[in-house]
Image (cartoon, rainbow, N blue to C red; front, side, top):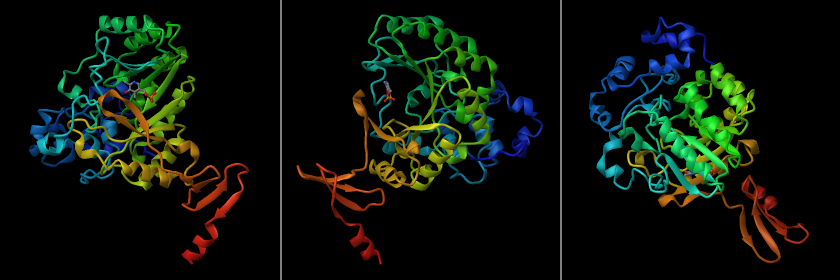
Length: 392
Ligand SMILES: *Cc1c(COP(=O)(O)O)cnc(C)c1O
């Protein structure tokens, strides 16, 4: 976990005079967000004019806090910077050719505007197109092309009506944009109405504010809301160990104190975290601040994001690396979202190498093979000794 030194943001000339009180105010972070390449140029002190054509298609945005996590501003390969700095690859027709703006048919499987009903028991409930940070690898990159706006109350009411009329729905996933960029009173409206629906048992908020603006969770009004709504879970989106800071730890403590569990979804991103040791560190850091790793996603085939994709097998290799090394609690499910809205499928390393009616040939976490009798679970054949001898 990264310990951020007192007033660490003052190393940026732009924020040298910012008080702790302003810096730690989530609204200050959003008000003072960086929303153009020219602002980024000023802060990084480098020429980004070749990226201006990207900005015309996909907007730029980051909070000062998230940018301040970059250790060395001259290192354009920094994993934080890579998630917020546009790249010409985003609009390269060849690289993006196979991508789609809506690979999962979220807009097609939508009975009411803003709502996606793909699985029988769960609906996706999109509340805004606004984010305080625009992740370059966003799976919903089509919203970058729309104006930034929170939905109107009438739109929420229509979505809530649909859920109320469909008792098959047991869970609502609130997403966006980032739902926690909404003011508390709008969130209260949504949460109160959803909570009152008897058949809705779980309300999940998907947010990246914990990563990019953890001060959101120092807001007493929000904490009181979380405390009041006992159906709530929070799912967040950390991709790199450098994102897990002592500020995040305090924010998670605040969330947990309201009885709300915190889970994480990581996306496997080429050049950012497609490395078993980086994911190992990330999973350890998450557990240390009491966030449970939930999914590791294969990067979706979204137009504008194709250059972040790895080979699909990379995630399986990473899971193989984690098993046996990291606490079982720190091992996420590696999943790929099937195109066409067919749903998420878990991919796992194969631990059963062979099976007959009599025996199973299994692979241990260290890669040793063990043949066990199916009926009495006796070890028939253990290759350990041989393999050890071979190693010598
Ligand atoms: C991912 C997703 C869900 C939730 O899936 P879980 O496996 O429960 O996390 C629900 N609806 C849609 C449309 C989704 O894309």
